[in-house]
Length: 471
Image (cartoon, rainbow, N blue to C red; front, side, top):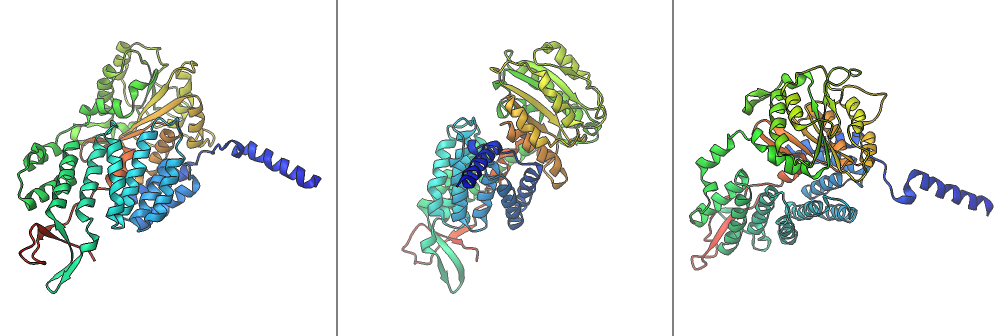
């Protein structure tokens, strides 16, 4: 009995020492974030089984991570397993902390993905309540562009919720019969999608197709094809500085330190639609952001450049430089060296005060992965120690979301997620800044199939259309 007693005591002490007694969870290493990022790329390319493998491995490494659960659940639905998807997504919702500042938005996303998992399984009737709940909640949230995706998904689900009336004839393949009243409901949803985001080309396509089919006039100037085409080429990068401040919540902090990448790579690549290199675009963008930051926010600045052991060109703690001087320092920055990202991040806490009541953030602007190992310190593990000091790392990156940038995005993801912050990246093709967190949401867009007037049930039955079913 004594042996058993001491064994239990040792087991309990081991659990407490490892954190299990207090339900604490060790941070995942960079490999989990790399798997998640690579899975996101594969998913966007339509390689769902390969993506699913990556998402599942990332989820198994760290099932407490909400983003990993979200991606894994959605992909399970896409692969035809909405039941398991529902289990994963509902578990993710239950595990959200009541103190999580993004809790409500995360609940909305999990609810929407639950709806999408049933939509992908052609169980549209089960999808509709989740889609409608997600829309009702998102209407109260600031990220209105998500509403466009949600309404588009709702419109398609309404249109294709016809599972009990599929029909085949001698001269037609399997098709649904859709009544005009359902088409009108779907049309209203697509109209709301276009209003929420006039540049949502998928919603515009669906809206125009139903307008033509129903032979109703468009009431939206956004649906004019000429205007939509003009907007597509409008350079919006520098003009989105207010969106950056809003999406990254830069005015919500008491102390904010700009940590800017001045490495040589920043002058080697162009922001095509802006007609300048990344370094110039970065400086111009910072100069646009600076006057929009509330005067109550204490500002500082640091630079990432030189070599691993060289001092930074600029290093001013929050509140240690006035805005006129900060603006001047930004204007006269010059490129220098490599990207000792971790080296500078390790030093960054010294740029903030010790006031525990102050909310603090690093605003990292970069175009590359860390080049200095710093004794083998894992950047993801270190990020969790930064979070304990109450310092968030919000990221704006000039890197495109490609497999070549897996290492960099893995680092950005663990920095942002472990410090409860966000990432925005430049979509250089459309000259837009996109929140990385919503990339997987944008994959939930799809066009509706063409329709034709139906005579299957005879001319006496009015208001029926055929929608061909993919077999």
